[in-house]
Image (tube, rainbow, N blue to C red):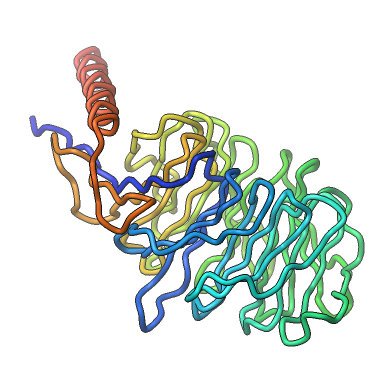
Length: 350
């Protein structure tokens, strides 16, 4: 029987606190980029392919809950517990704008045309800032029924999506009228909501369920029960044939989109998985965890049997492997080996 291969991720260090949000840019002439939000108050920008650290955006005074890049990856935005959302120059790292709020800001998103920034948080208000007129007061959309957890744009910036921390459902708002036009009902609060790259699906994670919704007609397309409480899910962007989910059990699960069957289970994080996203070409995906690391997993043939994890260090662009990482990797391999022994035992009992 063939030895089951263990997926070896790129391990990105640098954050000193839990990683709570990840966002990939679209593919640009310079490649694609990954930005991470962490409770350490310092969002980080990386090369999306290699995981190499590019820079850290410094200026927040509280946990950063959400981060994003605009379509061209020229600007970054971050939402923080310091009651502000900031816009940054992604090339120089300079702060361009700081938009003050009256409470914790949990979510932010650039519009597709890059002219607007949407924010939401504990104030239960969705705000739209015009980046061409940053000094003008923001437009406030009709009051959200609960504290805002996630926000996104869809339908070429005609519709806004939001979910709440303290109640189930995803609300879809008409930007022109500022009113809710549709609610996608879920039992638990939605901790992750992603609009697919082709605009066809909305992927949500609520409790121990991952759901896929028709982004244009708003019907429920598929709903799958997960092996644990999941915090985040992402649909493969190129073929749409698989999705990833992660949460309390610290593992990154890969599932078949059409059947819901688990294809792979990647182990390595030492804390719950808070965020997961596929790269724009679908060749890899990133996971961020309570353990403060980001791991970039290859979708394709990058698998090694007993090798060390490839490390992309957070403080320098040059990769270094520390003794702690080596011992961690050995632990990971022991856990994986135990899993294999268990699988063999179960196979023998069938």
